[in-house]
Amino acid sequence: MLFCFYKEAAQDWSDTEVILRWQELFKASHLAQRFIRGASLDRGEKGKLKELIDLWRERLMDISWFMRCLNESIARQANAEDNCTGRFWEGRFKSQALLDEKALAACMAYVDLNPICASIAKTPEDSDHTSIQQRIRAATSGGQPKDLLPLVGGERLNMPKGLPFQLDHYLELVDWSGRHLDPKKRGAISEDTPPILNRLGISAKHWLYLNRNFESRFKGLVGSVEAVRQACIQLDKHWAHGVSDCRRFLSAPSS
Image 1 (cartoon, one colour):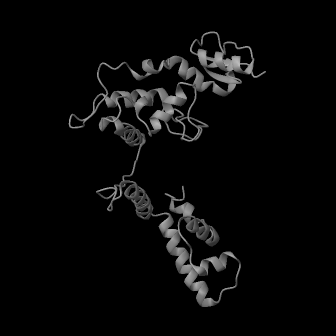
Image 2 (image 1 turned 60 degrees about the vertical axis):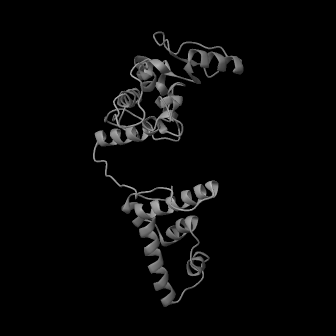
Image 3 (image 1 turned 30 degrees about the horizontal axis):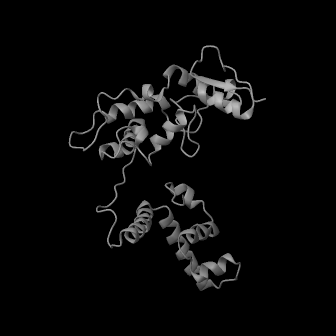
């Protein structure tokens, strides 16, 4: 994504990088295009180009400008599909600073529960176009989605890059929250729905073992018993338990 939330990063961009980034969104001025091609500019042209680059740099790290561009593109597409005119969203966007892990978890769960609040879905795993659905689908195969920042657990030494929650804890948090939504909301997770880890067939104990020992203990294939068995049949390989006490997740030898 071209938008940059940190001013420090944008301030480090060279003039050329600012122009190239801007050109990915809009058509740059003739003056900027000449500069990119290596043409010589006189003093007045350099001054004018400097003003443009400063303006573009500011806009590329401005969340309001980012939302303006996003709103316009979505509105154009929606209006073309519905053969109408007007704004796509009624109100102005909100920008809130998430100051700690509790705020981060609350924001993530709020967004992931939107389809349930709107009564579009009954459970998180049925909520299309949400990050939690992607995480659930990856979790049932014994992993995490590659295109999302992983959930890496609590703060510790040599902590890998990722969100400071355990995946099973976050799934349970969202599932619990979905059962206690505001009564004014149209939807909620039914109280008689089984807990999410039970629904997905994930053992919290074995999930933690898999997650903590993923690189060291598991080679070749990782997944449920049936998933590994079927993969080995297709690959014409023998399959074996990754560890004796791990009944849910297995690994197949890489050769």
